[in-house]
Amino acid sequence: MNILVTGGLGFIGHNVVQLLKTQGHNIVIVDNATTYGIIPQAELDYLIAERKFKIAPFNVHYADIKNIGDMEYIMRRHEIESVVHLASFPRQKVVNSNPCWGSQTMSEGLLSLLEASKTCKIRKFVYVSSSMVYGNFKDAYFDGIDEDHACNPIGQYGIMKLAGEWLVKDYARRTRMSYTIVRPSAVYGPLDVEDRVVSKFLLAAMRGETIQVNGPKEELDFTYIDDVASGIADASISNDTDNMTYNITRGTSRTLLEAAELAVAIAGSGTIQVNERDDNFPSRGQLSIVRAQNDFGFTPTVNIEQGFQQYYDWLTHSFYGTKKAV
Image (cartoon, rainbow, N blue to C red; front, side):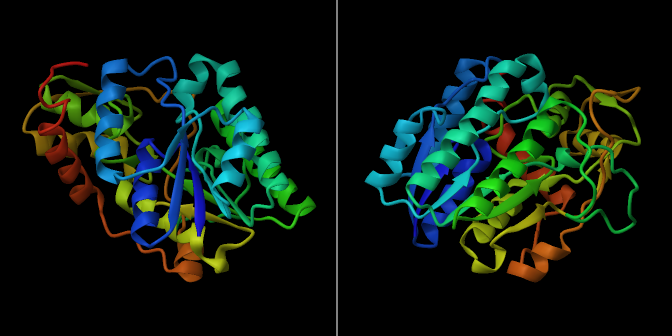
């Protein structure tokens, strides 16, 4: 297929692009290479250069998804059949720092893409949402919560992601376009930015600094990037995923304190300070991946011990390993 991947130079996006290319699809990338106002330019330049090297050769349009004219032009020019939408503000902290800008990207940008997709008769629209749409779900179910669990997001990021899901479903209802919605959780791995929970834990340990754990019993379904990218790519091309929603996670939760202790053990340095939980973020835990396993064979293979070690090995030989701070 001819597939448009928005945010295709991003952390998750470039990995999805690489997998879809190896499966023989023609991939077109749209990305504006933004710092979101908080990522140091030197860090972003390094990461994008490395991501480009990994997926080369590539076909990229540096464009803003809010520009519906540009989106329609790109879709028509490349005869796009399917859209995988990853362009978004990446997490709650970034949205909180500039909610108006976040809304422009996450809401107006999505609407522009959906309108362009309708006009260009796109067959399938894949929307990458987030486990943040559930809100508090810690200990909700022993085996993890499934996709039919009530969504009660806490914070603007989760609210905007859930609103995006509703918009995608409404466009599908009114057109002949099908959709697939995926909900990742706590994604980590090589070529990620420094300012994310696993990155911060490992880098603090490597630098002999103190890891800040906000809530020792708080849990996350930590998911290695290769597993997430594989799940998104497979869900995107399968006909069995039309008009469905999936958790794309490891399917096993671990506490923040366990993650911090693992980072210290791997790095052989660093200390841990335990604080009260941050009420600005929901309490999360394990998600069920049974639906994805049954519908398209999703099988995550990297546990947290393997994933942290692989990420640490990459960090030590990266831009981050050669600098005390970016």
